[in-house]
Length: 400
Image 1 (cartoon, helix red, strand yellow):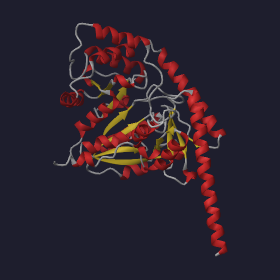
Image 2: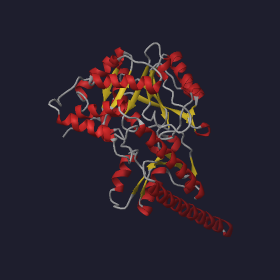
Image 3: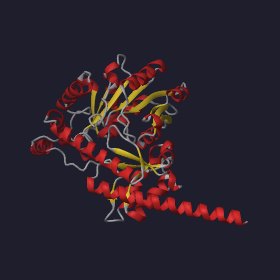
């Protein structure tokens, strides 16, 4: 048989998904690896889906999505994101990641480059690779709450650079970029004539600061904004996202949709209309619970002697495991095998986090507490073993 595509064979699977699969071997595993909200979808959303499923027509919709849903997205943008968009600038997608993929697809040809944050969501690079584009990682600064290193960023632009991808609030760091930072990034794109892909998946999960959408400054159609119901409304499996762009860009994305997905599930689109236009108190309730879990996890981690980040948005926490002497994948596998706790290796998100693991705040307080206790125990055990080995080596050296 002929081999499969070289492009696909060259893509490495996400270590996060590999960790989830490995955790299936442990019935008592504590799952802190996935950004999977543990809340049910809001009741009014479920009811809207049930009504839609019982209706006479649940067939295909327009490739760009139902008109009513696209209009609801326009309402959401004005209510929460501070800018207006025409309905023909909105395309309904299968979650945020398909929106990212389709946006890249209309911007790049083979060999073109996309600037992607380091650390950043690993699927960004996978999508670029599938499109035969080159993902170029730009570093962010851990000592400055993971804001981009603008000096380094400027050196990475080449004649082949087509777009800059920005993710605020960030997965995995929880960084929330200030208006000044985002304006600097927008002006950078203008100066270098780049598109700006703004992944705003976690735009409603802010604990400190304010969410700013770069599209509010866009006057020449270079910003492509991406949103989703997945995190805001605990609708991950419903798979409804949105991309908002200049109508010409949106038309091109709609063209890409046709051979890939045709359209988003009709019942899920009806549910998304209810999510966007229905009661929003559920969003605030979930945000407050995530904030509580963030504060609880940081406090417990510090009591256990762990070095952790302080995320201002999204629902992730980074734990520094460098004292273990192991890289992130080895530590994560050992933690799963020894303590039955599944976490995301930091290397899933780029080179900067190879000595970190990411835990998800989507687990309940009891699981978070137990999981962090086990993580600290495993880390301290490795640290003590490393210290013992170093002492033995020093004794041998002296005696020799």
